[in-house]
Length: 470
Ligand SMILES: Cc1ncc(COP(=O)(O)O)c(C=O)c1O
Image (cartoon, rainbow, N blue to C red):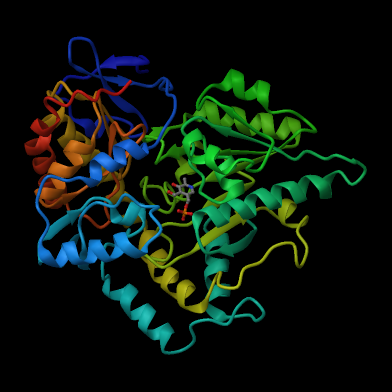
């Protein structure tokens, strides 16, 4: 049995370590293995950090400047985009308008699991575009039924509902939870309508999902959002048990592994206790696997590693290989509460998107493919520890499969910018102090080695950065 805090030396072979847990530097700057829940607070990148990021070092080409200038003049300014205009992609590489090549460790924010221009995915899109693209949900269509049946068969669920995005999937899960409570307690004038969510959570930008998203900066400008959400510290079992209340809590929303919040993993104990508390109180347990689901952890579903089953699971990002899709998977018991007309969408589950998703699912569901994700995830962490671990700015390397975070003691944006200039695309997470690596799941070991070499070479960009993280 391992101690909860067991020291690992830098030369340690990481393949013997359970990928669920993080590696942390101790006071003597050795990496330690820790099994306890990390203490964490608020999340995501601030506007100020994003603005700083937008002002990148390298001068832009005329072609890029022209595109960015048009956008500056006509777009609503919701995005502080990196100053790169991308034109094409193949495998794990993308190319800008000047022909510069980038290794893509972002996968369109954990979307392009098969990389760019996967030939089978392209064939599926062309085939279906030539057959039938959209019919609305007034009619049945073959790809939607085939995909729905496949997803039900390979998950805990009995029933499925399609949406167009992650936030819409969570919005549907909110409505289903409330309707379930109303349906289960017809005698109650005021059935349970409230929700529990967690620190560092990210569930989306529409007013229900936004209400479940922890970062105040995202919510406050749009108040009042959906009322009745209580935030509990992620991993804090005692507080969660206190907050989940019979007759009050309709559902508990939790990401088994938090992505935007900084790559924090739940523990088995935490999720199992949430399961028990939900069962005892009559609340539903909702796993948001929009970012961590469908193979990213090396398991088809992230929650498989914890041996806990939800009542509802939401999915989105990788499922259709870059086309917009969202999914709610649930049990017969919950679905029985939902009637015709309770929810719907014009675009959701179109033949085109569902046929493309079947091509993605065919590949990701393969046990050899999933095993390769686990293997590459371990290799990536091993390389990161070896090449970056000695740097005083690196506090922790953590993650699970190919969702990996490098926590720094300073803001990550100078490193992200330097990597981009050097031809490597990476993301931030957490409070802007975490480098997030969510590459296409098809990435090769050589590409991972290249990514770590670039990250390592760009580390000096963090020196002299006085913007420390708390
Ligand atoms: C865990 C999680 N839930 C929901 C969402 C929202 O998904 P979308 O941007 O497709 O609405 C995201 C997006 O990053 C996410 O990471």
